[in-house]
Image (cartoon, rainbow, N blue to C red; front, side, top):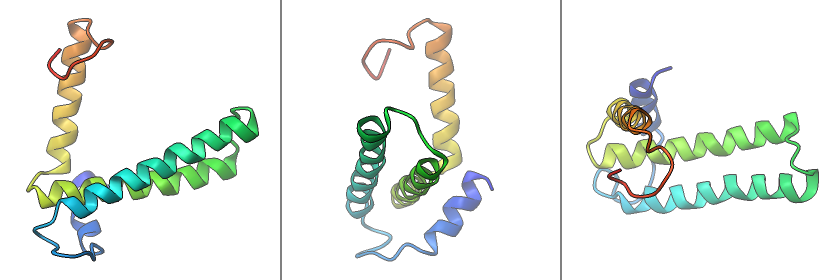
Length: 109
């Protein structure tokens, strides 16, 4: 599956208020789901000495899927293509790599 297909198919399951004119709802959902990923990782560190079991990988994979769903909905609400978002992100990262500025801070480095 590619991002275009995912974005199209995931949209069929987007049931929330003011769909097609509401980027706030999926943004809040993204924050919540990202927190769930972080919480699972935190508990691996706390309870499992940092060792990620196969069961935990499955649980984290599900949460990452939820993160992806919300990213797709935000992109759709803003009229953005996930393919384009991914391509531009890779271009940005490789530009930083070539200029030896992967480390550091600031969006425009």
